[in-house]
Image (cartoon, rainbow, N blue to C red):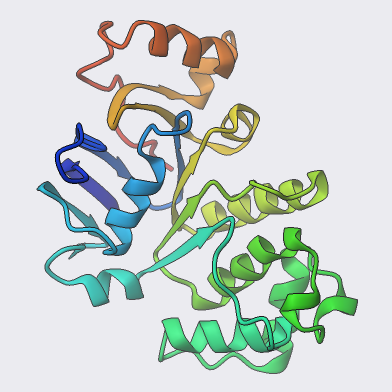
Length: 252
C-alpha cells in the first residue's frame, strides 16, 4: 500500500537526509520508523507528502507515484503531525468538517458523523463547539485523527504524533491506530518514542542518518526491549541487518 524504493534526498550540499531508503507498509499494518532527532523522520514524511522532491528512487501510495501523481497520492493519504495546522477561528466541529471536504471532495459527512468521529478519538463533547485557538494543545492530533476517520483514506502517515500531548491523549492515539489497522489501512508512524513503537507497531524499522539499519517484527521483541534493540543497532549500524531487512510486510 505504501511502497518506498531507493528513496534519497539531500538538503543542498549536506550529507543525504534520506539515503537509499526502501520499505513497504501493507494494508492493515502499522509500521513504525523509529529514530532519534535528526534521523530523517520528518524529511521522509515530507517526501511522501510531496513537499520535497526526491533526488533518487521513488515512493507510491496505493499505486499512485508521489512524484508523478502527487494530487492522487495525497487524496489517498491523510498526513498527521503533532503541530498540524488547524483553523483557530473555527470550532473543532467546523475544522473537522472543512478538512474532510478539502481532502476528499467525495466525502460529505453529516453532523452526527462528525460528532461520532470526535467521540471515537477521545475529544470531549464540551469541546465540539469551542474555537480551536481556545482548545488544549493535546487535542490537535485527535482532531486530525477524526479527520482521518472520516476521510477513510487508504493510507495514514503520522509524524511524531505524541509530541506535547498528555498520557490519556496518547492512549487515545494508540486506540485510533488499532482501529485504523482493523479497517485495513496502511499506517506509517515515525517517532522517537520507544514505548509507542513497542505498544502499537507490527514492524519496527530503525532509521539512522537517513538509512534503515534494522527491522524487527513486534513478536521478535518479546524477549528484547525496544531500548536494547535501538541501542544495539545504533551502536553497530554496519551489523548483519544494516543492508537487508529480515522480514517483509506482516500478513493479516
